[in-house]
Length: 460
Image (cartoon, rainbow, N blue to C red):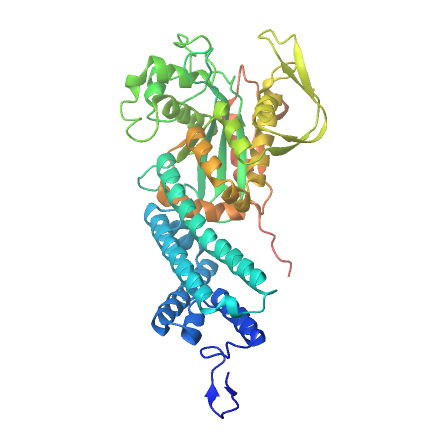
């Protein structure tokens, strides 16, 4: 871009402008501000310190190239990219890169503001150019800075929740995960699982099947080699009773955790606990599945997580009461049918209310709450409220899923969300009598639900 002066000299209006013309200086200022935003470093190459400009351009083009390569790899092998950005090293590297670019863009923007010679621009344009430049600087540098903060916080959060250890392979093409809803409270000894389910996920398609286990199942068998199973070879409490008040499925946790921790001396070191390990062995004995991992969700902290996400939308199908006493005779308020937005306090009451309802009603509501929360916890929502989500999550979740498997499971979850979840509740309507369960029939029902759909044979 050149021009010819009255003396015939060729000048560069960007590097050597006619500073006496407010119109030219205003146009030049807008060009430099936009160039600094679109291609950081280009403003310095054209109008300022070329060495600084080449550094800025090199950094910018390197970032663009890396983003293109990462995008291509994600399209071809998404699990690779997700694994990198769910690892401690990957997140800290991302934080360092983002912090570097935040500082680089800040230096380039401040330098650009000095290059535009704002005092030479038209008086009416000066505040507009200054405000626009400042806004761009805040948006770009602030976004990079916040990204660095999220990356470091995510690394600390993931390290506090997920363990470092070897990954488990799928069994019969599936990953089976035990989900426990912890029912800890000041009025009870220890933690007792309030909800139990096994999520079985096809390792190829992502198809998920949820197997809901009633907490009041009796005579629960244990998988082969179970430590607590050796004490109850005919099922939990079937011979001489059990060492807690009730011989039901959810009492296994309490007995192993508080009464017989010596049966599982290595559980804590392996990222589990005696109660979790014994319950997992019982879930394996009931379902006939090999369960690779567990996830324990503290229901008391569950409300904090929902509050951090800004609440959850629930479609209430039937009136649900909230009681104020242990005898379930006084009702504080009702959840009325219809779509409702609930904060953590009300969501927890909706999931756990017992007044006038059965355990099976509660199972259905808890499953509904889990599905709603997963559906509404979008990446954008989590990122914008990440600090609160991470703080709540580290108090809510305990799991033995290794951090190295997160990328794989995140990729698998993206497939799962595209498919309907199959539900297999072990309830009387499905022929399950919790007081006298037929575990052979239960395992056959589960096997049928997990069997791959028959492939249609093309007709000749």
